[in-house]
Length: 560
Picture 1 (cartoon, rainbow, N blue to C red):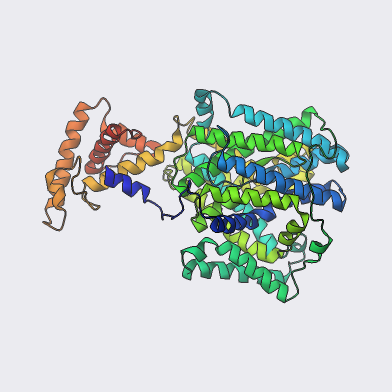
Picture 2: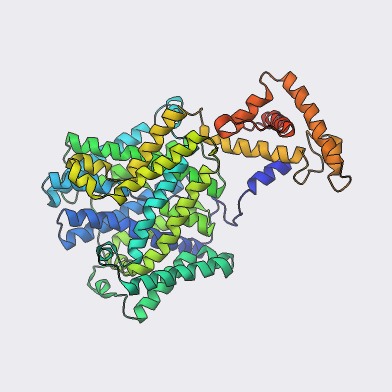
């Protein structure tokens, strides 16, 4: 079992910085700043879009950006470091959710725009944050019942949708920013994006472990330096910015609480809960830390607390940022304290507008090149989650395929929502994440029903069964003292070509005895281990899975 445990822990490329390791201060600062640069565009784009739509003044827009960064820092520290039973204690950056953009603009325009509209938005944000926080404190049994809505086929689809929906955002930046795309983009910005992307890929291919771990940061710095030398990176706003800008609660006035904006924001938070659930499982898989329903509950409590705090500190709803999940996977720097350091940087940027102006001077092409790489890795994280699902089952394949189609509809036919729906309905449905996540949940209920309790923990149990099966059938390196394999298996295939067959025969015999002694047939156990309940016809593998279940039970692992 020790060898099997070692194989499971080594299933992915190991990092010298595990999730709970506190790194030396220089590394914390460097890796943390990389996270800030990686998420910066996503962090500031929401207040820029919302503030511009509501016709805020430039000074008010700068204040929104600083308030957002300040709150992002506090929220990320709560999520990564943890405060009691709040925070997942995983390397998850918190940022303003894109899902809320259209609903907030609809709410704001309905309230007449300007700062008066912000007060109505903040009332809805605070209420939705408190509701999310309260939901995550449901009794364990009730919360696990809700989590049955999110088996791997749902969370994997949602993460994949996030990556696919975000990739066009990175590509638009690569072309020079969203306003330039309709005119064909800016060739020089696209060249910066290609150069930045190429530089990052070369580092990932040929660089040492340390250089690969800061590849995104070096790409952003190098691309910005080249753009500056060619006259395309402007730092004039740095001199015009203030040194200190403190965010104060209710800066624009007391929030207003109106029922329809609150209802709309509650629906937004339901979607962001699916996002955070998927991101939590994805980053847990990347860093090699088991994620259970309590971990997800802690992550959602942090979301709720951060969202309520955002409404108080003049910001917006918060969610675990998928962009930085992709960065963790690329760099393999798994320490959650790196995110804590990033949170400190964000707080500083939120207090020093001049420092934020420096980061804001990164050209869009450079930022888009790096972002496109990371967003692609987000989609890959979703695909890896879907790899745990039996996609040979037609119903699972339909859930994934149809959900992806729904997610792409708003980007493919954007005018449909404005021309054929009321503004209120359009503000809710004109989102690929909203449609894709909703489709995945509904289709899964139609085809599969509710998942078994703690459905996400099936993957480690299945990996354990498969590792044991390989060991017992002689297809993997055999431990010196196997617990369940017969003596013939110890000799291995190198001793005698006929011995693997003898080992399989012995496994079959042990499977027969195990089936007689067990209350459940081996086929049922194998079916529970595999998504979709498919049973392998190989008797040796069936017997190995049955033996693996007994051995897992003896070791206290989840039954397969």
